[in-house]
Image (cartoon, rainbow, N blue to C red):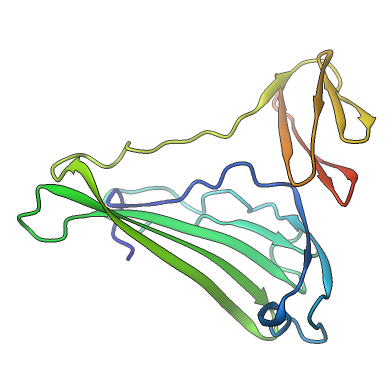
Amino acid sequence: MKLPYPQSINCSFDGFPAALDVRLGSKAANVVPGSSLGSKFVLRQTPKSGVLQGEYVAGAAIPDLAHTYTDTGDDDDYTLKVSFIGHGTFYKLTQSSEYLRAQVYKAIVMENPDTGQKIFGDAFDCETLIPADTDTTALFSYDGPTVRYSDPVSSGGGGTVVINGQTYNIEGATSITVSSASGGTVTYSIVSDKLLIIS
């Protein structure tokens, strides 16, 4: 269930890698014409991935927010797009409820320009001990971790990045985003045992 903001708010998906190395299952293979069970794709995050598509306005529907990957790294030109979406909603079960309930919806959206979208999602609903009159606007607020740097960043190979003399080891399926004092941002990730540098 999606209610107007601030009763509903987008999920924060933290720690997503820069790229995914995937093999299609039977349902996913039906989305992409010409593919089959086990077809391999390397998907990269798109420019709109993780970027709120609008602003939160009290009383209005929440804007879209998704972590999106495509085989081209482009939002609009692709063969396969995979998006991770979700939102949480605080609500009262009845008008006289003393506490809020919480419902979290998460889904994976698979898309091909010719066959359209297929959504695989699930909702979790539970009671909370949050008083029903609580302002839900600022209950959850997450910022992704970043490392600030001023010196050049170098790669030591094998998933090693050196920033300001500090060595960071990046394991498979993880990534690190570094932001320079001048405003530049670079993401490093390991996919298929290769170090990807995404600027």
